[in-house]
Length: 115
Image 1 (cartoon, rainbow, N blue to C red):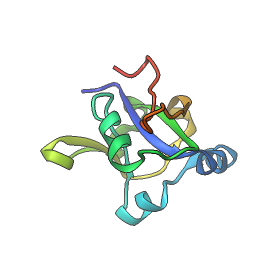
Image 2 (image 1 turned 90 degrees about the horizontal axis):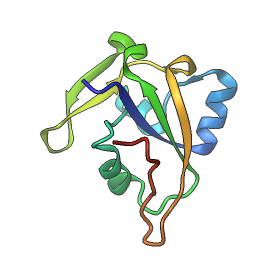
Image 3 (image 1 turned 90 degrees about the vertical axis):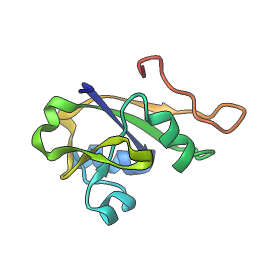
Image 4 (image 1 turned 180 degrees about the vertical axis):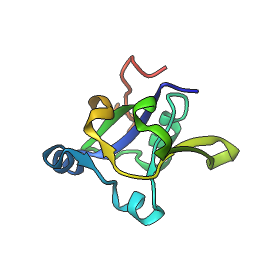
């Protein structure tokens, strides 16, 4: 199992979450009933498919172990298992947050920490 799960979040939503000390999800997460996460191997495709060209995003790395049983691995895009968090993301589970910058081709650049 992957030790880290990644969440792409609008920076303004993350600022609100930091003040509240908990992230309850994006409008899409709330609609679907869980927080969408990706593994390190999946996060680039997630960014390309759902966030290409968007500025003002941050990448949040969360400790899978700290999320406990609220994190479920479920079949999603392309038949792959994705981590879905059924509940809010506590700040205590966050390992780091980094801004997502765009390259000249409109694709996001990822930090070296992503496998």
